[in-house]
Length: 121
Image 1 (cartoon, rainbow, N blue to C red):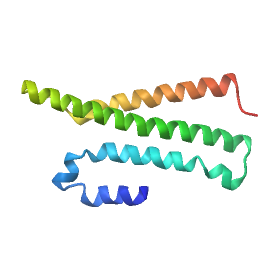
Image 2 (image 1 turned 30 degrees about the vertical axis):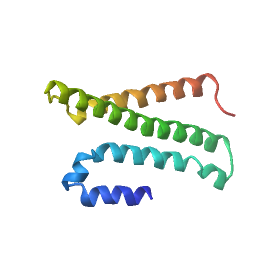
Image 3 (image 1 turned 180 degrees about the vertical axis):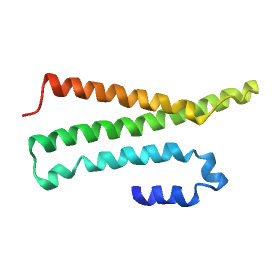
């Protein structure tokens, strides 16, 4: 389903209704869902130290990508409504990608510290 969603965005991304829905956020959300789905692969291949680490990292980063994409999209919609009331239109979608990157970076730092301080054996 995720690949189909990304193909739909690629094929119909030029249409106005798709542009309005901010396909970049949808693509980031789909990427997060894909990483979360990949976290279940170790159950199919057998659990080991490497697969447990992969499961932990992919589930965490996938969740962070999905949640941060939804949060920043919601925040952007809130700003659009606020700017409509004050007749300002200084909102650019790329302004919020730094927030997504910051949320994922904090998650990666936490995972790195956790992996160094208490590795899975």
